[in-house]
Image 1 (tube, helix red, strand yellow):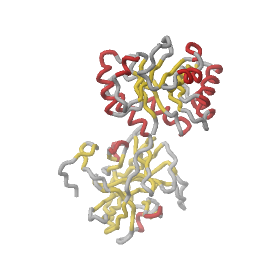
Image 2: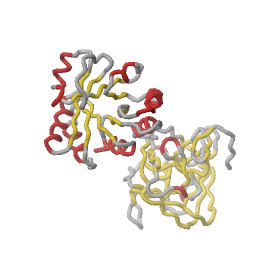
Image 3: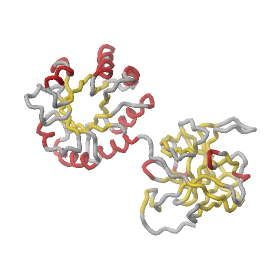
Image 4: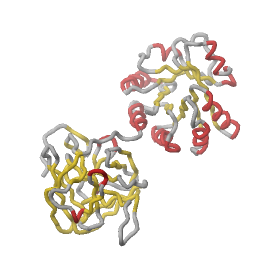
Length: 367
């Protein structure tokens, strides 16, 4: 789990509400340059005293972690020896090659390293992460907003150990925690038994082209009903008449649901460049991927009916063509037009009904 540090130094009149939200969301640390802000915080949150630009105080007892500027306050390792009750870390503002080298050194040696990169490029952060790949300390990178925090969490696929964010309003702490989760939670897939295959005529189907290279055992979950979906296979497997499209899932008819981030669903017809969908593998492991484009075209359609072990029925309508595939137990690739009653496919059974894509506990009959 990535670390979330909330910087309350410039929150003004909203400080109390922002701190309350941060504690409720269980952010990892609250940062201030005033020990009085930290004194009343509960033990569930780390108290970080951020001293760059401030004189070194006589009393550090309110803080769990003290972040210093060595050029002003002295070496963080020596300060830790003289103040054994506090952990110390180093702040480095990266503006050029010499300060980048300081950041690399701090990341390799300090327990805590707080970095501010002035230029918009993420290449300096990549260099620091590579330089400190085997270090035991934690790198906390300052982000301007939640959108930048999401990028920082993913740099070099591993990302910074944490992000320090100055919230602009109530809600930012919640969004930061959501961004820190990174990988979506795993899903409990089930084996569905095919009960019927029906040719249902012409209609519009959607190919979902993502900005991601799918693995051979990955696809996206798609279904006609919000409480039952089938794992549609990505086009990573060779076909006799066309090259593979490893970024694509020929997903289904445009009315179909698919899963997105944070448990939300979207109709395939709603997806567009920049949308998020959930890539899912045959073990239920998931990751959020970005849609690059959606191709909606008129094609003949095939309806797959299946039933879950608990008796719940599932339906998926997709393009009626041999090269459109779904995934079965163990990752077996199944051509949709060759499915027959009794065959097993992988699926997912969401517990909640949906209202505008959000899960809701209410009566809803889909058929």
